[in-house]
Image (cartoon, rainbow, N blue to C red; front, side, top):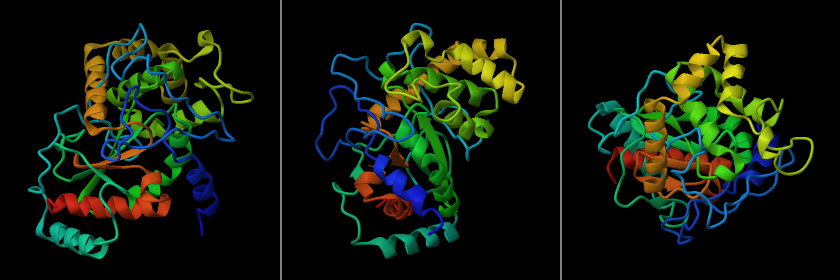
Length: 312
């Protein structure tokens, strides 16, 4: 199979990176367990119970929010309260497609095992007439790094009645996740998130330009060597022609602070405890590991999207 080696490597990483402190391990609220180590870099650690919660950020950051669309989503979309989880914007042809996909998967997937219902349903991350397929991720998460190449294939295979978006998490401040979240929303506000999505993963896990981990050794770099928002500004100035001073100003703006805050609120409301986690239209949650692997995750994504479209 074309992506067999990538899928095998990915499957070994797909236990989630980190978790919210104090989160429950009951099936109805669990997204994924502790992440394993990776050959590329150590897996992010689980924060202790006393660690900062999702809304806590470094001194230069205020809390998080809103949604995202990354490699496949438009940079121009804005933070919103999302849709009302209805399928009113779908065409008759799209609803027919959803019915067909749903019928093919009836009886194959078990709620509470492969996927979990979000109760009550929550808003989507972006306002869209489509069914939202959302990945909660972090550029600082090794499992997300291993999986993100395959995400694009998943996106391309999605039915026409869906829209794929991305929501950055910040719930592991002990591994610098808040700065990656802030950089994502800043890049999105400046119209360069889509084109730079893969590049930031590479700068974090390959070249080391924006790495928090010692890529050639073990564990984290000294805190003083962690990438700051100014380092992201220089990266975007060098590779994408963005004004570095403007990038920093936008990064510390009220708008980005509110987007980060909204993101943290949504992630908590969705019941996400690790990354990567998928949220379908604010109604269903699952991880690649709960789905049973990469291939199953792809199929489950389509079935849950169809289920959401039909308000099942």
